[in-house]
Image (cartoon, rainbow, N blue to C red):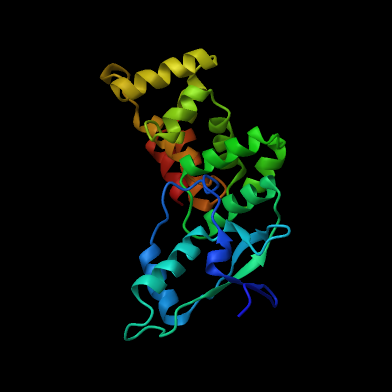
Length: 256
């Protein structure tokens, strides 16, 4: 069989698919073993995506890092054993995609949301790459809004625009995107934001004398969910009532 065959998609030898180091924003590929068992039982059902290297019999992977890893694991661990396919998978289905770094990064962010959802930290990592590539921020927001609410997209964008010191804290898992967004609303400038973030990382959350109220916590929850859903709209209305010190009767009307 040839290294590459053309049908509706390409049939590409596994060894001819290159994984670009550092491209995938994920910290880890999740549930690979479970997917490997499925592939070892029924074969590859969903194509991965990549672009063909000009003049070479090779594709560079854009989407489907988890699927590719699962196919390789299926070959090593399951295929050939009772209850599974008996012949190893030598060629895999690859949909041709753009080689443009911007398009590849946006595609990866959207694809990640559709399968094993990216964490906010991973999303910020990808958005930061797009900003460094010079992509217009409005275009980034429009793209992210295909899978997230506009409010969530803006919060991720704001976190991705923070100074390098904050980026390093987010990337290393020392502080969450939601916490950074909360500090951004309080900080008057980047210097103060860094100071507040460092204090949080070193000392934990606010001192007991400045402990977050229940309303503060609900506001942080609003940053993590889609406010356009019925539940999100209800929570927002509840927060507004609580901040306005509404009576129990007024709050109860929200439930009618």
